[in-house]
Image (cartoon, rainbow, N blue to C red; front, side, top):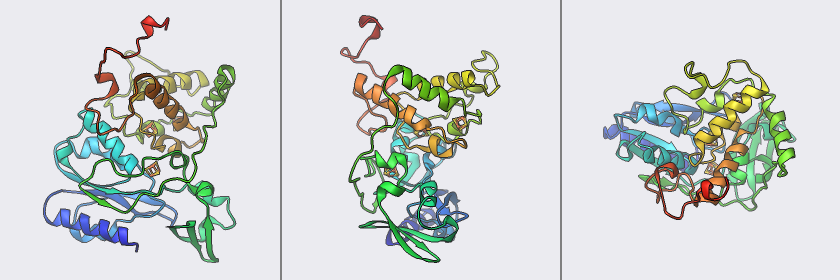
Length: 315
Ligand code: SF4
Ligand code: SF4
Ligand code: SF4
């Protein structure tokens, strides 16, 4: 067990024993050593089920609007999860005083699919650890070291905000990336349209990308509405365009780039790339970044005289 994992368990146990929180949300061991799963710890003696390793991918903030609405909960959180929480606080979906945040400095998390393309089989993996040389993968046939660019999830390759922005207790140190990856999206308008048409033609409209997104907390999503009816149920490329284009408008200025929508997509559509483009457009136009603790309200809740006005720019 790592030193940080030990400390997480101690902090969670303390918070539950003291009655400060009714539950601590964190990651527990998954069905394989390269996987973890969200766990909800309610008894101090269960705190040793909490783990911290490079496979702690889930953005646990997605559970907060339901769990932390009327009671205080503890949560173990990466910096991107914490940026989601800041957005939820700004949008008044949760109260800061209802959270006990065990914030973690981050070195990134891994993409299990990338691990599978290396010199060993996923089923032989028995442990993952960050070292100064990269990711140490322990297997039944020996140890391997992978460079970060060979194993980090896409959103971690572009992430420079690896320190928790707000927390009640902070554990571990951030490790900044050595290089930043470039977006894979073609820039020319026609190529871009063709790129996304091809991607959306694969979409089966399962809505997993919506379910896993902490910014998608509407009680009734537009996609499920019957009156008015925004999209038809059939899984065609046209309806997928409608769903994704509308969802992108809804998360503009609210997506913090955790990449969960992309990780969960069963057909491999890079949804987070689109969300990242939208976030960049909001930043370029209004100088606003989601998840910034120094902002008092979301971008759509603010008005400044100098704000860009499309009506005055032929938009
Ligand atoms: S996106 Fe950033 S904060 Fe989140 S897991 Fe990756 S490196 Fe850590
Ligand atoms: S749209 Fe995707 S990347 Fe953005 S906050 Fe939601 S799940 Fe995370
Ligand atoms: S998770 Fe993938 S397949 Fe499912 S609705 Fe989202 S983009 Fe479409």
